[in-house]
Image (tube, rainbow, N blue to C red; front, side, top):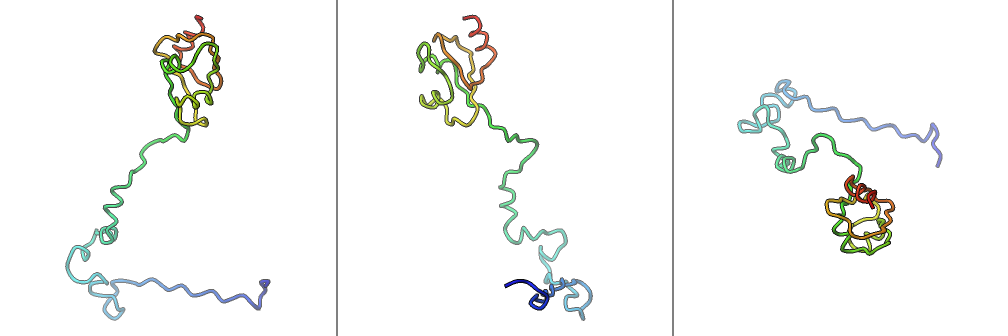
Length: 140
């Protein structure tokens, strides 16, 4: 069915908001719909407290400051490479995942070299390295 002038419906009228505190004749005078005494009759009380949501709002962690969307490096130590790889192996995210040294191939990998690299002839592909590990590889 196509829309044309004869079959457009009239828009529904929106209900006007209740004007509170405009005298008894207006229907919401005297206490302005808040009842008599009590905490909710006072000013400065949020509706969240009445609904029990204040405790929930306080439990939610608030984000403060800058949070980067970039994935953090998965760290692999030189000790793990010495233990799991032999001479002339290729080290890439897939080989590290096969040895269960990292969790995901998609996230970046960095090798930290505090210890000495004992395995010789390694080839590194698609892997970041610390400065100390790069120095060790240049010496060999």
